[in-house]
Image 1 (cartoon, rainbow, N blue to C red):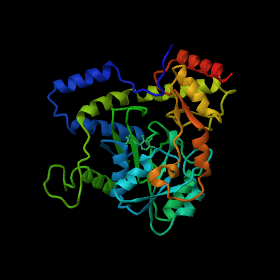
Image 2 (cartoon, rainbow, N blue to C red):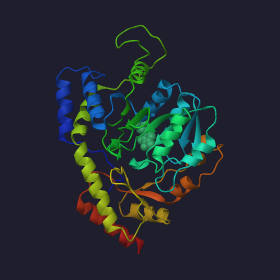
Image 3 (cartoon, rainbow, N blue to C red):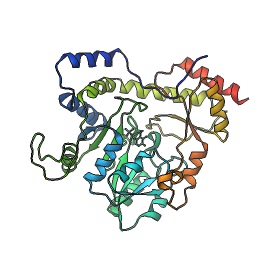
Image 4 (cartoon, protein in one colour):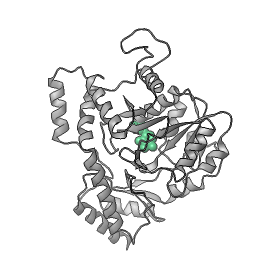
Length: 356
Ligand SMILES: *Cc1c(COP(=O)(O)O)cnc(C)c1O
């Protein structure tokens, strides 16, 4: 029986060779020129002025909150990976949960307006599975009027665009993840992007012990050690070379799923420039179905439980009907970029058999 993991990282001889060459070159492994090279590639791909690599996206989000001095109330959508909220808590901010749109599974403007008060400093705008809110423009305008900083949690959106601009470039700071499951990976890894000179300087200082310049032992503020490593950067550089192909392939895979399973599932609405990181579908019988598929060797992934149902955030009130409906109905089909058309055919025919 064929076995399919719900998701897999994709490395090959190119990464192997790059790591081998790097270690042979006498590099010191820690963050240096290879990291600078990767940052330039990411800045150029996303169209941002600056990029800073950090160990992971959770840290990237925490740094964003610190760099903006936004450690007050921070609006976070209820339907997201828990790191979106925990990154705020880590630096002493207070995540305030709001509901999501039922169509995009991203932050709902009205729900946000109901939670905003004088203590609100920022919003973690999560582009869930590469999507952005239908009311994106209105949300950005509202935040500008209310002096609320926009930190984009684009962890799931590397390769996803909105009106020709990369997701993550709309807020003051955008954050990406390169953990094992994401579209490209360095095992672990995160990036912050920004167009703002001062914010970039603050981010660089925060990740380097608060040093006033790169190698100085003078410190104007408290900073930490959030350096990346060149060993991961050489893997990242190879992954960047494959990004365009992966974007194309992921879109083909999703289109094939849609074609073969159109009578079986409801597929959430998706705009052309959106790169779906995962192949999401809606089903009211997902628990039973996921179990049966597991028995057939096909791994799927469940939706995220609403954060308001998780132990650390249970005390937060509000109407979370959009988030609860996503948690009830969404699940994710196998989503590795290396799935072949034959694999998809096999997975889809197994789904059809199991459903009967
Ligand atoms: C993966 C993910 C994160 C966390 O990224 P790490 O690099 O694992 O720290 C944060 N937010 C969202 C929406 C994610 O999907």
